[in-house]
Amino acid sequence: MDQFYKELRKIQKKERNNATLARVEEDFYNQIHEYLDVLRQEAIRDPFSNVHGMLKEAQIIATEICERREHKITDAAVVNIHRSYHLFTGKPQFDLVDTTPLNLTPEEEKFYFSLIDTLRNHRGNISLEKLSDEDDEKIIKPKEIQKNTLISEPPEEKQDDEVLNRLDEISKAKPIKEEPREPIEKQILKSKIKQESKPVPKVEKTENIEDNPNAQDEFFDFESKKVAKDSELVTMLVFDEVGPIVGVDEKVYGPFRPQDLVTLPLINAKVFFKNRKGRQVKI
Image (cartoon, one colour):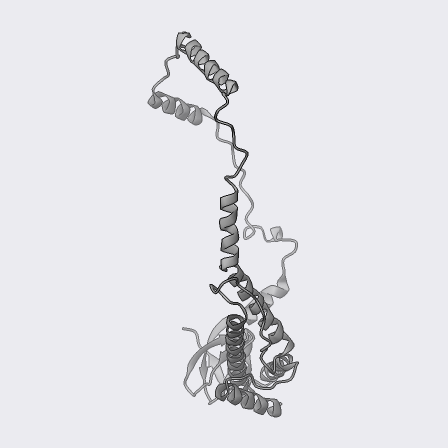
C-alpha cells in the first residue's frame, strides 16, 4: 500500500516537471480506485489510526495527476487539428498528422480521439467549402421554370373577375343585427352568484396517525429509520488529541484537540464515548 503511494508521488512530480505525459500502467485508474477503497476501509475499522491523513493526501495527488493529464491531452488534440485541417486557404483539406501523445491509457486514448472528432466537425461547419456550397444552393434555387410574359394568362383574369363579383355580393348583403350583450360587470356578478349558490361538499375528517397508532403505514421502513438516527449529527466535547477520521457520511472530520467542541455523526461519536475520548454535549 505504501509502495503505491510512493508511485503516485513520483507520477505527480513527472507531470509537474514535464510537458509530456508520464508513463503509467494501462490499468492506472483502476489501481487508484482500489487503493483509495482499501484506505477507506482501514479508516472505518480504526478511526484513531494515521490512515485518514494518508487517504486525504492520496485523493489530492490523484486528482492533480488526472487534471494535468487532461490538460496535456486537450492541448495536443487542438494543436494536431490545427496542423491537419486548413481553414480559409483555398479548398479546406483534412489530413490528420499522426502525432498522438505517448503513454495514453485506453480511457485517455478514447478521450483524445473524441476531441479530434469534435474539433473536426466544428471546423467542417465553419469551413469555406460548406459556406460556398450553401451560396451555390441560394443561387440555384431561384432558377425555376420561367413563364412566358408575352402570352396572356386568362386563368388569372378569371380569378380577378370572381373576386370582384364576390365583393359586390358582400356589399349588397343586408347587415346582420347583433343581439345586445349585457355589460361585463353584470356577467361577472351572475357568475359569482351561481358559484356561491353551489352547495359546498362536506369533507370527511381523516384520521390522524398520531391519534390512532394502529393507522400506521403497512410498509414503514424501520431499518432506514435506524440508519438515519445513527447518521444524525451530535455535538461532542473532546478529551484527548485524536487525528482526522472518516465519518459514515464519507466526510473527513478532525484532527481533534482537547476541549474542542465538534459536530459529527452519532455512530462515530459512540466510538469516542466508548474509548472515553469525549462525551456528548447538548447546546
